[in-house]
Length: 238
Image 1 (cartoon, one colour):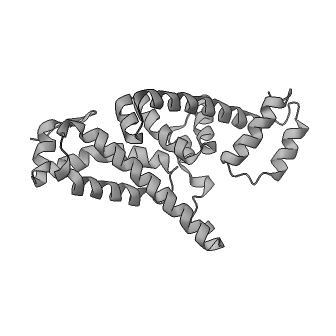
Image 2 (tube, rainbow, N blue to C red; image 1 turned 90 degrees about the vertical axis):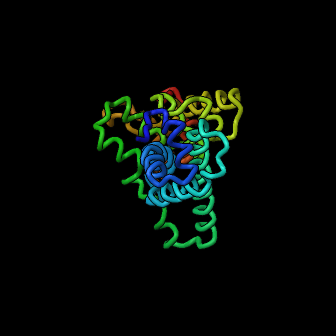
Image 3 (tube, helix red, strand yellow; image 1 turned 45 degrees about the vertical axis):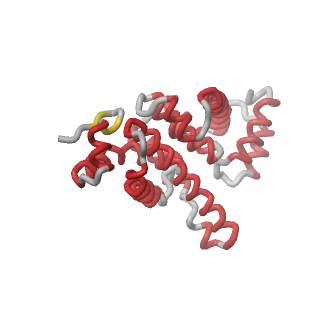
């Protein structure tokens, strides 16, 4: 009987799957799928490509398994494959939009009303603070969303800091710096969420209103920087 736990499949399962045992391979895929879905779903913000990227990741894992030299490194190896697939899909999507520059291409971009943060808020009934954090993630850079997907899994014990670092191709020290920078960015984004959600009955900032009028309503890195610059300088919003 092949076994797995929250740390992934055991060594015997990986060895058997690597040797071609179909039952072990099925167990390996079943054990790894929830983790892969978590990483890809958060990194791609619930985009419609998530299922495709998960499938591509699992296919690469199965194909590459015979070349895995250390069975104990399976989880780190699988997480790294998922991160590479996310990056490849993001690059492919960006290139496609640049080439077409059309309304048809724009239609392929995720609907903000159905993104991962919204689904999380609706399904889990998040508290105000957690809702604020979930909404804040919409303002992050794409690379930071990938890091966030891994960091959230680290905080729940699903992946280790070593696995996080290896998946991103970073040293442990560099990974720590990236995580700290991410935490600071999330706090900035939370400030933006709070400012934009301010009660209309309270004192309104005319500068923020003016800035908001020019904003399309789509969260993103460029407008994060603009809103953050305003919040740092504004006595009303700060």
